[in-house]
Image 1: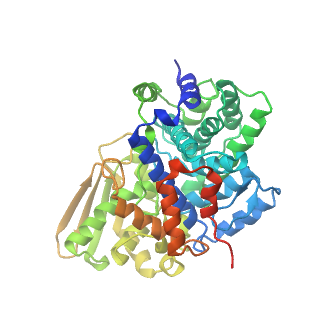
Image 2: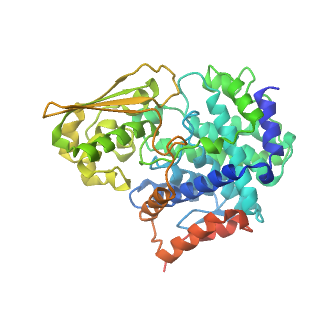
Image 3: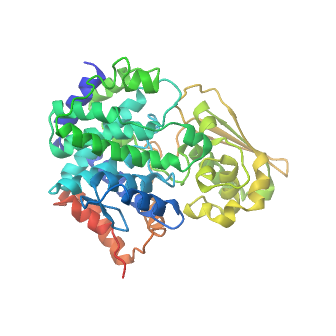
Length: 458
């Protein structure tokens, strides 16, 4: 069986009862994490979110689904666009590192909007749909063997989200195959936005969330579509990814592995490629009492993808979307503030001359790993003014399945995110939202979840 047919069968036959307790727990955990990140993405620290809401509202009226926090009623595809942008606009959403895919941004925004639009979708169905969608998105990602040229998180996310809609609605294989063909024909997003540090990167997530729901509407009407959308001569894998090998993905499906169990938390609101370095530097800072002025140089030894994604130079007029992917700025911020959080990108910090002056002291060089999709291992060498050389090494990033976050750390991130929402989440609202998320499998209708994500203006 090819991967195309295997994924079609998986997405249309997998059910909540087939999920292990560990897979259910992981899915609920990352729904909670992604909801919190999406709430924070509504806040004033991301002023472009208001522009996205206004632009999307101009695309057409409707009341199928709602924007998180602010509550605008929109067509489902438009609500998914805005909510997807909010989840990814601060680089704080979870990542499947082997696939190099942010699996929840497109998927959760799409599936929640689809559930609102249909109505009567319960929590168990949402959990199973999210889990299946993550499987599809990440198994495509791990099949890639070439460096990324297109923005894989958005594209794989849309294909995964389409499979998730099939699970959510109980669709058959024929409808899903047609929907995937139409979604593939609608995919968008390149790495040019990443290279430039453009906020369009997060908008590409939104565009692809909208694409999945738009394509589904055409598929339900029976519109014909390419059938060999993944492995055909101009299918996703050969055309978009280039080199690929489906054997590991097929083996994972045969073994029944739930890919949600391989998803990593983002501990810092930065590109995931920066996490190993920041984790190592933070440990050295705490252990050695390092301050910015103590450091003569920092050398990060890392795989090629890390160098491609976050080794960019500091530039004047630093924008927050660029700064999140700029290790010289991020390492200086950690040494000055002791942490990298959502407030790291405040205007006074982006223009701080100390951070600009530090930039030349940070460099990223190759290590022995030549895997074009690997983010680890990483090694750090810090030279101090006292003449001491400090070393650190990571085979796995903090927040990964190998080094998972504690429940306390997950909740700390949850509340940090809600502290930055466009409208205030008081203690009572937070408690009720957490309780609902913790008991998501008992939820009667996903629309009740969205009710808790919206704060009405007084």
